[in-house]
Amino acid sequence: MAADIAEQPAGYERLLSAEHAGAIARVAAAVAERRPRHVVFTARGTSDHAALYAAYLTEIRLGLPAGLASPSAITLFGARPDLSDALVVGVSQSGGSPDLTEVLRTARASGALTLAVTNAPDSPLARAAELSVDIAAGHERAVAATKTYTAELLALLMLVEGIRAGDGALPAEERAALAELPELAARTLADATATQLAPRYRFAAQLVTTGRGYAYPTAREAALKLMETSYLPALAFSGADLLHGPLAMTDPDVPVLAVVGSGPGGRSMGEVLPRLGERRADVVVVGSADVAGATRIAVPDVDERYAPLLDILPLQRLALALALARGENPDAPRGLKKVTATM
Image 1 (cartoon, rainbow, N blue to C red):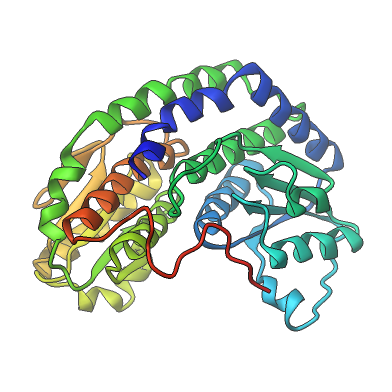
Image 2: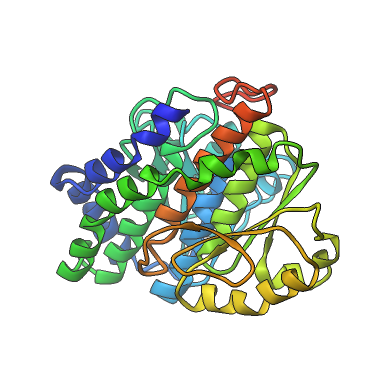
């Protein structure tokens, strides 16, 4: 897991290379030419959080309605929705989940444009789709996904921005900003704060993660990593939903990890953090600015669209260090396989 986490700056650089950026641009141009009226994502587990990030991008950057499909509606209940005007995107590291493949097959049969985003370009999911994007993350050693998650995020970001451009090619300003990500990721991983915080949670019975907008998928992925590797019950809430009742469960014995960016989503957390302070919750903020009463894991200040590519990195390191502190093996978590076949 440590080796996979450390490879992420190089993974960003590889995806941004002419070879892979060009391939993504060609797919983006093909999607733009078809002009879908809405976008449906289908995914499981960690990839579901990447798909949620892409749904935010789609609605905010493309102005298209976007949502996450429920595979069981098709595989268990036999639903056959009319997706003739849709782009249907399957996101999966392995591309081996039968239910996601069935969603793409069904969508394609109904006339949808289908796209697979996967680390396995020869997988059943990729073969079922009309278009395919290779996230080029390479072999992932650990069972818990890290580098494949961030590769999905970056590939989906490049795809959406390429569709927005119309011809698939990223504008020069976008390319220049993305080119800084490998160095920013390396700098983020060099900070030991997250690892040093692990003993703080060694005996925690439960934990809450929260964020809004682009940060919400990060909160969900952080919670999943903590549950997968440390078996620590972790509940993820959007900042808005946290105020609708679950705030009552927070107190000095329930730590909170808050992902707070510098854009609209981060600023909206200004309503949430004081309420956590009133509850005397133990709050750690992942963000670029100090927050009164909270410990901070520092990350570079970037456009809020890019922040998920950096914010998750220290949280992955925290999950790794906490698992070790609790005497667990994060490379072989119990009950977890690399490919989970569901229908």
